[in-house]
Length: 552
Image (cartoon, rainbow, N blue to C red; front, side, top):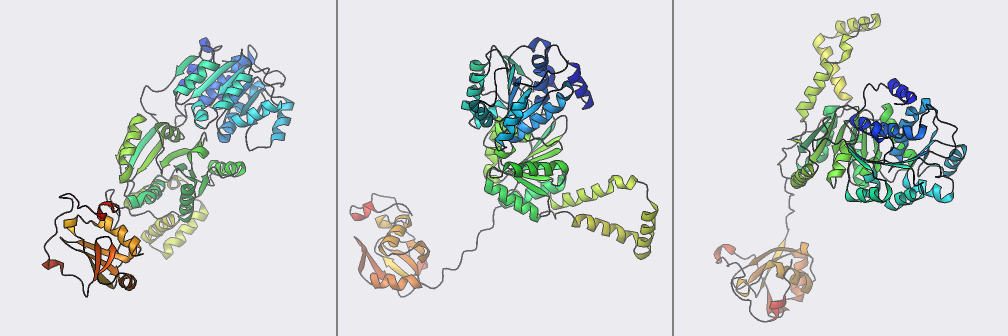
């Protein structure tokens, strides 16, 4: 390994390389094009930084003067591009490399000036890079290596045409390295057209799931989906957590609710400006926020070093989405939890998703309020503060407290103070609990009418209801019970609508061909009437009613 890069790794505490870093730095591959599939969070950025080093530096330890770029790294999102730039900047700092970015949403003029000053490595997003190439501000003539990071995501986001344009503009003798969490057919096609005898490198775990991520599928009652997320956040008290939702509206709703419950929360969605997104991520990194609510597109490629918990408020649409989301945690040897919120209606969908992703999850329930309160007590009892030496001021204050209150009262007050600074946990219903039925409002004062059609004529409420609405100029809320008997049907109408109906269809009036209406003085006594057979036993009589609507 080149000494300047080895020194940079040592300063960062890299004792050993990850599997993907070892694989792509194999001396036998240093001149080959590579198609690399590796898990998210496996150290790919440092991996391809090391892989292209012999191509950029050749036999030297230091870069020459910065002129036209020697390497181009393409990433799907702004956040990932900036992350890659930060990683490559420290990795190549001792080699004297100048790394710059070309990212959509940033000032084009600043980028142009940076390119004019010269750069060894350019990192950017597809649309902005293509813009620079077409305007002549990005000189591709000296490129020795092109890296496509998260190539599958770029194709999913519709950047295929941009990628093909850039690869077509790059020198034919450059190295092309494609890194992708998955290798779908479109990636294989791209590799065949734009790589030269690419070597396939896979450091996936042979179908085994990421060892540093614990997957949980949490069964919840329909009404408790959001309450379960609150309990998860309270129970784990993660340094950083991401909650994924599928729509901007869901992101806005969850962000507002978590903020109201006292969580330090930020959001990431497509409607935010680059500046707002940058500030949100910085708040997560410096501890001002601990929870991020995000859509998939907004969170693609982001890296939060202390992310311990990923919650899927909405299930992703496919297995790749689940792996990408979950891969935000469990990075660089750290442990993480990926929790799926699963109400009864989507249990089958969750099972299929986990099966397609080849993930074995623990099916369980969210933490209860009692679980969280016990966890609070355990955190207090095991807090490192108990081991710290007591100062004179602290001892004096403790003595004053004990003169005024008993030790029990002091301890209880301490527990209350701790809990007052945290959101109260939610009481959750059993996962199979059904929503309470809505109380139906009393139908109110009503009048009954008899129609001269019954079960013998195969009368059914589902075609009588639209007939009444249409012929009587009624809405559905004005119609109560429709009771079909053998030769008649009794219909209940609200008193307010009954007067209008009676004036239009008095006794003996024709509602429709073959159907007459009779106003009743009181409600019919159904107990004295024989139960009508279910309609449909025989053929419908001929006549106009054969063509009546069959829908309610």
